[in-house]
Length: 242
Image (cartoon, rainbow, N blue to C red; front, top):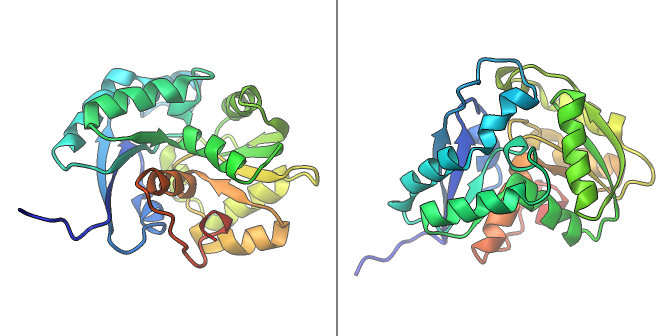
């Protein structure tokens, strides 16, 4: 009988335009492996908009990507696309979780699912929401979180046009966005999108603002590891990991 020397294998379903796999690896403890697969958006060359992002919610495409992971026997699978799991409204993420679980044969989560779980973990009541998207897309995440029971104090969208721009933006861009969207009454800040790279400054930013800053890659990894039965303490990774 062959025994794995790993504690968990986390499958990651990424949009085809994602370029920041390294950000997810930053939140991987020892004895955990990441297994990436991708799914295609036929509108990927268009500027980011509601219409351009809608194919990222396509359950058939997501299910096909999930099935490619089944042979690797993942412990948990996460959808690394934030907009793809909130754009269609409340319950969108749960439908995607169901299709991933059927395809991959493993428990699943999405970034949106994980954001809600993290806000509950911090007992947050009020949340500020920032994202790289156009304002109307960012507002949809705000509406989703409001329908999930949180008071949204503010939303700011940067209006970036593509994932190449998002994934190559310096961490300081996202730190500045967090400062801009922050409100004194907000218990937490949510920075949307799987494509941002903020890990080098996240812990310091949380200390500066005095509250958790929940980012897409970090929160998906946090929830996936919890679903895998792990609760690692990772120094320098932010409040989710303390």
